[in-house]
Length: 322
Ligand SMILES: NC(=O)C1=CN([C@@H]2O[C@H](COP(=O)(O)OP(=O)(O)OC[C@H]3O[C@@H](n4cnc5c(N)ncnc54)[C@H](O)[C@@H]3O)[C@@H](O)[C@H]2O)C=CC1
Ligand SMILES: NCC(=O)COP(=O)(O)O
Image (cartoon, rainbow, N blue to C red; front, side, top):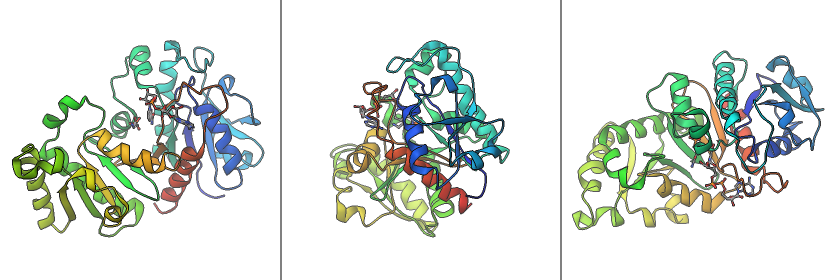
């Protein structure tokens, strides 16, 4: 095991994240070094853990115990119920991981799920999710959310906004920037020299020539045309309902979609256990499992760690090729 370890943030302690961190350690202890940033008193204790003074100690601890960089929280862990007192701790742990990644003490960050509303209520967290917070911490205007698995990669152009706001938010500038960041991310972080990008339309049947909406022709198509002239390999706007079956998926490396559910429903349906959320356009590597806090099963030991294991492996792979 070589190189700096990956920083795994605890996320919402009332969710399944800490249970999954322990299971991920069991699966990966002989494969890749990572350390969990968390309040040690929150740990379920299904595996041994060892407290670190600094991330460099993670590699030598890894084989015998889950390495934990302690970050005290205000209150205890209450599985299934987020406590507002712990919201600041959740936010601070993410910032700490980013600092470590920016300083080279962590090779990447992998984030366990946060509960967005709990952070809004408890810490007045002004961001809709990690993606936007990490962009701010990384000093970039925009970061792109991509969910990736062996079966499919998807990017939602607009992310956590109400559906009613999507048409106005889907501007040519946002779409163009999303496509540029996506193409660059696939080139530099996934080794795809000329990524084949399929772009979904916004409306049914991609607007059907204006019979079912105008944005496909008036907003999306001109951006694609202009990027094609620059040499981008882009198809679309495509009817979203027919672009995710197996034969269609074989024709592209990534599907860029208009809104959250258009992108995330297909990948979570195809590969909920293997999907990884990766943020493109940041000055550090960030991955995450594709699922949320799963309060309904928190504390029961039922949480499946596969997506987090895949996210840690993807982060390690990206760090190795960086
Ligand atoms: N990266 C992040 O921080 C993410 C955070 N969230 C947040 O999580 C919270 C809950 O979101 P939901 O929509 O309920 O989605 P969810 O993914 O937490 O749960 C949806 C369903 O999947 C199940 N599930 C989720 N992860 C599982 C696992 N590892 N093993 C077995 N079953 C699992 C749950 O038990 C539940 O039935 C929200 O606040 C949401 O914003 C959601 C997605 C990603
Ligand atoms: N639905 C995906 C999701 O909520 C992940 O968001 P983020 O916290 O990674 O920005």
